Figure (cartoon, rainbow, N blue to C red):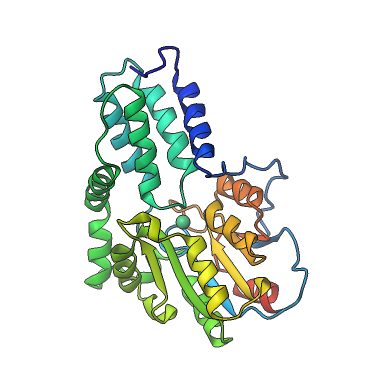
Length: 308
Ligand SMILES: [Mg+2]
């Protein structure tokens, strides 16, 4: 039972939101009320840059932005978390628990996985049970996810699958074009660093980042995308608009905006490559993305936007 007997899935979800706010984690943007996308547009420009300065650095998110290897991870995390909450003996229905879990999993996407596991631990506690360590939840989730995606990584490494089949369309030519223009590319992911390195290598894009590949650590406070962005700015005497942040999560878009960087939201439909995920699009616009793409297939339009 939840500690508040009147608590329903919905009110419990609101409780988490309040708690997250108390922890100085701003709630994510609501899906913006915006016009529907025009299917003919390959790059939707929300705002033109205030200053026309050349882009010198690009920071990419990994999963959902470049890599499709982890497509479907929500289908592993959500049922697992529901299972954990059912073990507390709560009388909430599986549907109520799923709605609750889906809300916080979605809200925390883009941050490190541990934040979703910390939210799960809070929910277990709210139901009067002693939660496991959030790190234990994370490791069990990763074990289950690996069962689903191991064959993808294997088929890339063995050469059975071409890396481009597990990249968001146009990723490789876009990375190459940026580098050809002298742009230094960085990769920062909320996924654990060992996986990010391994999967970037399997996709044969690791060489594009010249050693600048960052990911989550078990000591989660020692990493965040914001830290990477701040470091890029400091170490390179860089000014906001010289940095472009490219990602499918609101976290990196907000982080990029907060330092005056340019931001491209990638509203990729990971299950249907080439498609547009409308939910991602409206949330990325709500987070302040300067432009929205579904993928990088229209290289000319992207380069015109960044360098035109
Ligand atoms: Mg992502």
